[in-house]
Image (cartoon, rainbow, N blue to C red; front, top):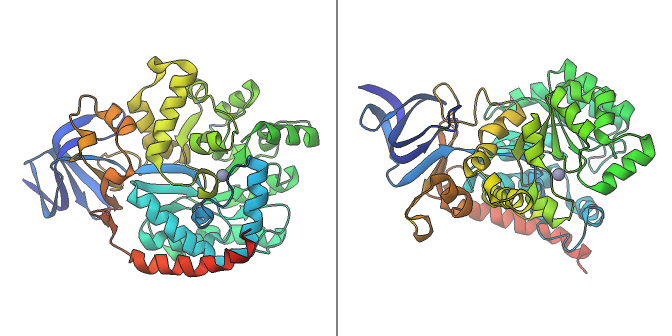
Length: 437
Ligand SMILES: [Zn+2]
């Protein structure tokens, strides 16, 4: 019998999200170092260390393809407003409190919330990316941050040339900080905050540094109108002409894409991070992800930031995504297993990291979650994926591994003391008092 460093043993259900969507009963995973080394029936493999997964559903960690983790600190700060009202209110608060240290604190808080709910990877757009990356890596998240671009100096006070210089150094900074391996991303905010000339410059730096690109695009109709009035083009046309879409690109939202936009995204192998919770809350519209997927656009799921959608709960995002398809196209168009794949392997494809994570397969990183089925709302199990999408929630996630390291054990971080983090957050929030009405 083969022996591995560590075995997640005897899982009641093992969901792989592999190419044939294999689900096994009473199965085990052998892990060596950071990597899945074996998947076999229980009793066929041994481990130096062992985790008993009886009564658990073991699955790939979830992948949040669009968020702003540091905005956990502004949860509930901009309520009852649309996107424009939201941006005005949030940008004022950010101006009052955000610096590198605060962004790091908010990102640690967000990364911990994400991990506790079973998210092991997040694509996170926020200022002070070096600080945010350190904050997320501290709790063990596979965190994909990256340099942010606006035409104007942002809260970080950086001028355009400083942004460009910083972006050139980003891959080296990632290496220096360490943590779970992630690709380099550059993150221009949107086509209404970055000029086509600046976007072309970013595309060039992305080529030089072998980086992908993450950008908000066509989030609501107003954005499309504004960009159309300014340039006579859709955001996607701007991104194509400027060369951005020549790099692997992930759209935050992509709610309002024209037929032509969809064709362009397909031909450029672009991806959309579908954020139904944020889109519904800000009344931005409903992305037609069935059409996107049918046409060949890669679609992952995202929460967006906590000041627009209030939490980092990928389970509620999965459920909303399913309900929206049901509402617009009929329940027969909803496949719970496809929704789960969108939150895992399809999310990894959207981010260009499906070679290394997103499914439980030999050779991939051991990014794994265990869901405890020992709860009244999770028995009996007639349809496993329906149970996960329509009945389970983030509180059911009990244990989480990233790169084979257990970062959540019995619903607690193995890396940090939450009471200390909580005290730091509360102290920092005193700075907001003067802004409260
Ligand atoms: Zn966003």
